[in-house]
Image (cartoon, rainbow, N blue to C red; front, side, top):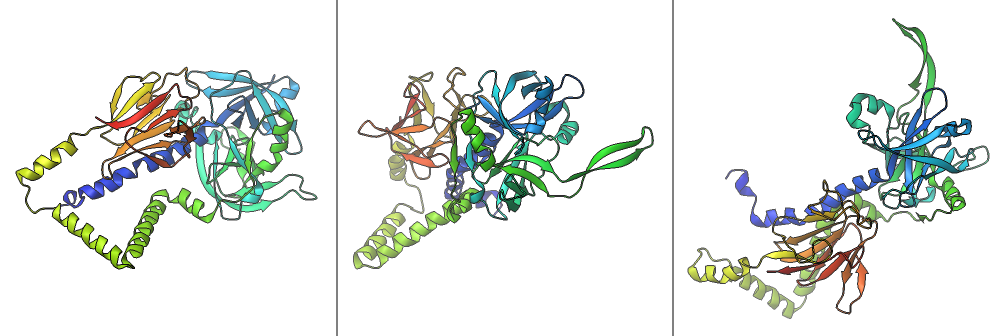
Length: 434
């Protein structure tokens, strides 16, 4: 038997049913990049400073380090660079600052369509917890050239130490092994749930004299130690958000062990959960005579539906099932009256043509770049919809006319004829057979 013939149809259906989970896991990295921006501080004289920032308040404000935008004290200008290739930029001005914590909040000249940021405090972390740093290190810009200027860098590491604010240490700090370099200052440090736990601020470096054959002696900064990045904990940023009148969401509780495992290995965790449910269900059935009889009856029926040879009568029974085509019906919005087949995997809906197959017009600002996934599981014969961590949510319509918001990152099963909408009832759909 060759390798290709060993993949059975049930095995292929099992892989297809996990594609939405993998797609939304990839969408989480996209969400981290969406709230990270490149910041430039242009002094009246001298070279510009470049760093990173965290977009807040749905893209109306930006948090960064004070040392990055200190040039504003001398009349310098701050710009948020959105796209280096098209030179798209937004001016920003310092709204509030805390020099002791090395933090500043900037207000943008115009709002950007970005998802809301979630925060978590120092109390939610432990040594060894995974963290991710996102930003624009200048060394990576030099290696990547023009194409890298509009793309942020994501690095992973673990928490090395947690230093709460105490006497002699006036700001709470997080030491992590996530790679950070000049240019990462002001960028976010995320936990494994995608919550901002810190603002990257410095790295252990030293100034040394180096000898260049052409230019002679020069003072350069070199890394003093590897895996020694520091971030100001988000605890220090929250008071500034309150001073600026910016609403925020913060968690002070640690993730459950099962939730951490789910975020690290979603497919494995879901598979084990399904197997446990099957084992428990069979165990409950087998403890009684009635249950054992039902199991034997089910196995007998299953065997009768798997003949050794396909007869004309079998083909006549299978034909009506094969003719039922799963479709997505547009009820309201730009796809009203249209019928979209759901035969081949999940269909992504959003405003970004690079991330979605069903593209919502750009003027629908309530729809995220990759808002939701809709699909049909051929192996199980059911529909599902999944919120890909959108800003304004996916809402399921019940029989009583109520709208329930779907939980982000989880596939929600839908019965034929079920209806849902994205952000607003003006963009609604129905799943059914045709």
